[in-house]
Image (cartoon, rainbow, N blue to C red; front, side, top):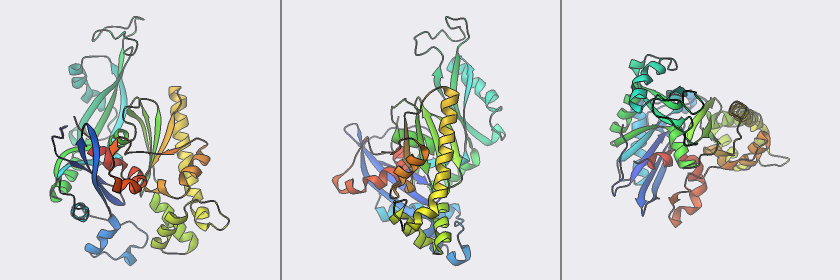
Length: 369
């Protein structure tokens, strides 16, 4: 799907996560984005509409069809009273293949011809089943102003190289999300990797090395961004849902009650906080995976991560950021996806929730030429 300009209309970013559907509507005002509306729909709520029994499911996630998801998107738009249908939607990272490859410096035309041959080395499924996209992210000697002509050599006699961010998305996944948006009555303008939307919303033009920890409902994504591009993307299969289950098992309570306690008590330091004890081991493992990913990148690239940003619903849990930073041994902060967005006074009190929970949807709605 191609890039497009705003014109005078607003548009929405639609993020279909593993536990909820998030929608953010942005417009453009005097060259700045403006928050118009937003909405969230818990996917577990759809089971009532499709007659699925919670008791039969136990603590397993609801298995939803694409038709169910389209209904959920329509429902959140209706409840939030969002009228625009111009849409950018995300494709989850676990459904795609993304990597950085190094090639000899050539013209863009020659690179475009070479990409399919190089991609076969990295893409684990036939290229006929994927759609490829790529971007040049770094060229040797460019910063020193010594970039030679295409096919030439650097002053030191070494052939220059170019780093390329390569993405492959299965065609069936593209068709799936196109179908969901069409059945939801939306005019889909673009599909984008959720990590790309996160980078746009949280980092903007910052080129320093940054780590983003996005704690979703079913998994945690650990993302290293350097030079404005994704360098490392690591998915860790523990998220908010596993933490809720751990609290429920430990305290012998329902999942619903465990979720309520998680949001109320989190990892507050107190003698009688049983919730902290029930979830601490899982959060400690998240911190361990994050620390390992960061240190591996720092050792490999001989650089230092300048900051660590937390997003996702769990990031707002009481005392979570402080606890996570303590276990990580590094300073962390909550991501601010609305840093470059005008927020109406009536929504100012909800800014913390929007910043963390809706970060991907904000980045999607920001996409423009």
